[in-house]
Length: 397
Image 1 (cartoon, rainbow, N blue to C red):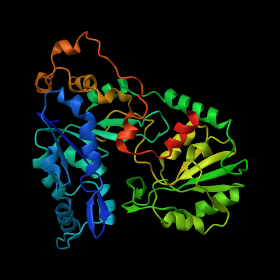
Image 2 (image 1 turned 135 degrees about the vertical axis):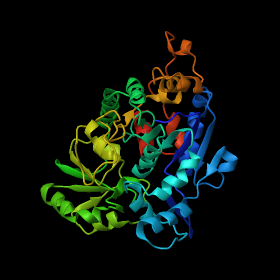
Image 3 (image 1 turned 120 degrees about the vertical axis):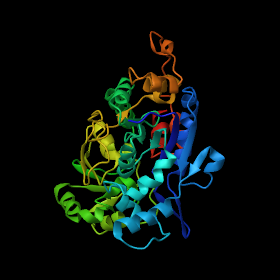
Image 4 (image 1 turned 30 degrees about the vertical axis):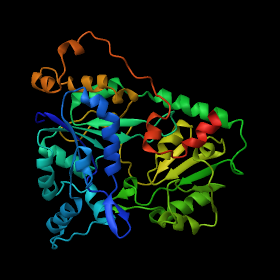
């Protein structure tokens, strides 16, 4: 990897979101959020810190503007041979995000913005990771972990540097903590009335936001409408099938419309955790929902219908062929001590150590204060995201 003398906070630069008749960045807020939560810790490295986003407000937020629609039009011209167009769309983004190797037009647009930078990104897609690898940039990807029922949101980190991956392993949130929290929730639920009339052997089908990256498969947005035979089999094999729409879904989508065609499938608005803790629920099914990962902590079978974005169990280190797997973290990753550990990890590289502003006395023999395992709702409130956990807060209080 090439050396660095600054840090750039970024994310999925190309992901659009509809806003009236126009398109805006779907991730600019995530990038600004990441800059704020990591700012105090990263300032201790002594490295200049900035942001890169498709956000015209970047100049007011210590950042640079990345013109995603223009880059998208160049990509269309290069990949499909059509004339450039200022249009940007969700469908074009879905086709682009997993296309490897990434288009050279994207790399050319990215290169000057990241020269000499360590890149810390929020949930960067495969195409962007491929660009960073081509450019020889060191990077850390911050990924929201699928287990959302902990006292606070959990994030996992992955990288292209084996030394940094080792640091992540030293600060990982143990699986036992997740299983323990699920047990506390299930213990409370044992005192509560079931949210629905349930039949033993029940299957729980989960909806997802129709334009979420988690449902992108083979360059397009998948839906339950692509799996009608599976829906039929669930109705045949289970005495009861419940469908739980996503709490952030808006209006009927293709998945909800497909489910509505099966009279045997009953829709429910009950809280997911209240449902999954019920002994009658045997199986949880979804395209690629975080609920699949959560379900196994409650002792349930889980079946995904498309490939997951990440393998959170493998924790494999990076290699020349592939990035490292995400490693779930305690809240240590929010501290200056953590990033001191990370940036001092390349042993025998005094250039990087000097650039990080790290004295050897800070690394050898000094005990660093560690953050508590999880401070309740520290990140959940800062993201303005609940995913149904507010119900758990109330029932477990």
